[in-house]
Image (cartoon, rainbow, N blue to C red; front, side, top):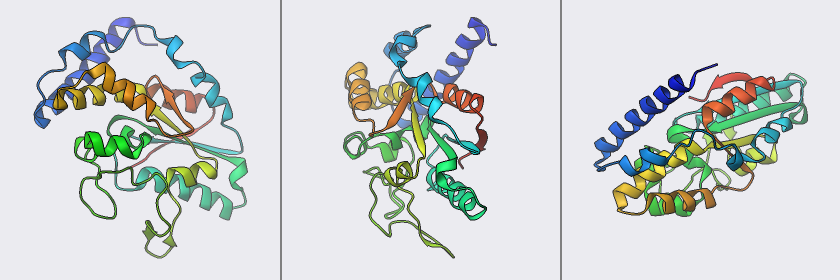
Length: 231
């Protein structure tokens, strides 16, 4: 178990990297955000997060670590996991797949309006698979039939809503939401707390907000999931 000092050091390192990235984007300062973003104890904010992992069940269990957009991989791999397990004798209902949306992939947990308003495609380096330009919508939320095709396979249903219908569980890292909403707020000269509140209110249906993505990865593995990097 890490000590409080090592936890604080990890936070400083994480924020330092984000601040460097923000500087590259032309933002000015994260000082107001870094001063109060991560209280030492915030368990009361995550009621239900621990229990959410009790939904993991079945013979085969896996957690996908989505740290960046990585084209369509955070959504294609869960589908492949379910399809190939079905082909080898284990139906969807006997499998559990968890996708942890964290770091630059956390935008996929948000409604289309946030993508347009805050230019999340540019901020998180996420291109729209159809236009190949920075996305101004969440391309994996309720996509149209035929939006995603895989050579040799054809159309694949890899929208978040479609995967949820197949039992795939999605969670979103609140630490990443805190950081990137602060970056977006600074770029747009808005109040960081207000922007974070707006983003949290725009989390897609049935996506669980968790304290951090790394916390969620640990919990999923404690519940029997194998780890797979979603890239």
